[in-house]
Image (cartoon, rainbow, N blue to C red; front, side):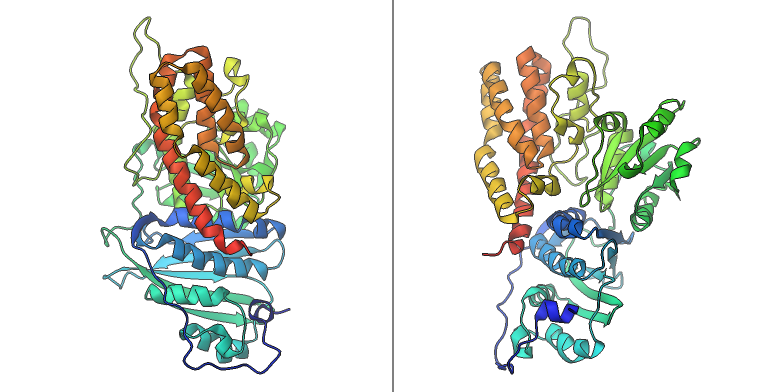
Amino acid sequence: MSLFGKLFKKSSKEPVIFEDERSEPVELKSIPFNLNDTLRDAANVLAYEAQSKSVSIIFRVKKNVPSKVIGDRYKLAKVLNEIIGNAIDFTDKREDVIVQIERNEKNEESVELHFEVIDSGVGIDQRAVEEILMPMLTSDKRARTFGIEGEGLERARDIIHAMHGSIQMKCQEKKGCRVLFFVQLGAKDLTEKRHYRLPSKAGVGLKTLVVDDDAGSAKAIVPMLEYFRHEVTIGEIDDLYDVTGYDLVMVSSRFWSDELQNRFENLSPRPKIVMIESMIQHHHIEDRALEYVDWLIYKPFTQQFVYEMLAALYSDVLSHAPEAEETIPKTQDTEPSEGVETVSQAVEAFLNGGNIEQGGADEEGRCICCKYSHQFFVAADGLQWCSNNYAEFVERLKEAIWKFVKADKVVVGMVQKGELEKTAEYCAKMKAPLAELGIYKLACLCDLLESACKEGRTKDVEMLSKSFGYVLSQTISALDQFIEQAKYKIRD
């Protein structure tokens, strides 16, 4: 079946034309948001469809595209979900869906972003595009007035028009489609572009080797690394056996082996090792490998993911969005006085956004989610617990929000009263259901706080309880964003 046939399903009867029928007006909100977070959330929502066909989503974002914009994040996400979702539906197995984004710098009145979504599927007859699809996309009439059914592109079209943009399609039968659209957004400073500034120069200008199992993804991350003036080489598996001279090595989890790890362990000096994992197509990773690597980065890659990785690896700071006003309280780099209790290594790593080391007493009872502690929320993991049932998953997320929305006040209150045993019990009850839903950072925080309370480590308890409010608020924000974007996946 062609894309036209499946997406719109031509009516079997003669169409009834309602010349004066129009779509409902679109109401837009105007709030600041991070564009890269929106791309990540779209990948989360579409993870199951992409995984079922082994389709990779690749974001290619030009350097002139800003991260901080002002507009309706949820409506833009709905457009991306509809259009990328359709592209996945009609892309052949084990092929890529490319999402290219650039800015029209000639428009000095707003941030005019141009999107192009490219698939390699069955395509559409060009005559159908010219005679039916394009008239529908350029109008504000209901799709059925053109003798077609379906609301996907109709919804996307209406939002794009409300954002002072337009949409068009270029298709060929058996050669796929290109959906092009642009929208206009605001910004606090229209002259700014990326907004990513590392807190330390140590993460800038590194010699980097990228060995990924997907050539398209490997190419996509190059400009993101070059933004920080990295010298990037895309290599093959054999290149991993001689990484002398590289500061940073990024390797797909699919290529990891005991032999490779042993070779890395014998290097001196050893480069930073980052494991690449797909948010969409998960691969089993051995615990030993997760304990060894310095960072785990998810694809589809975004500039935000790259920023967080470099900030944590080379700056010892919390990996959060650079525009966030709140931060987790960071530990100080001062020498401890004799007899004065200090923050433990695991808690210090958590607070500073670093890798949580496994070993010794920490290894016993350490929640597996702590290995993913830099991720507030990975929807693909939570979906697996619900058999990829979006309706059930959303209900469980809503239940979690309702249940834990005031957890920070509960925790801080008990800590202030010195009720550490009750605090440990409360955290123990929280961490398992959170980890099942893919809510990793908060689950790890609960695990660390539980352990600190049981062992009476007052300095750890103090620092972790102070960070609870920030981690909880960021987690709930991520869950709210996903729930809003997942609504269209749920059918009554």
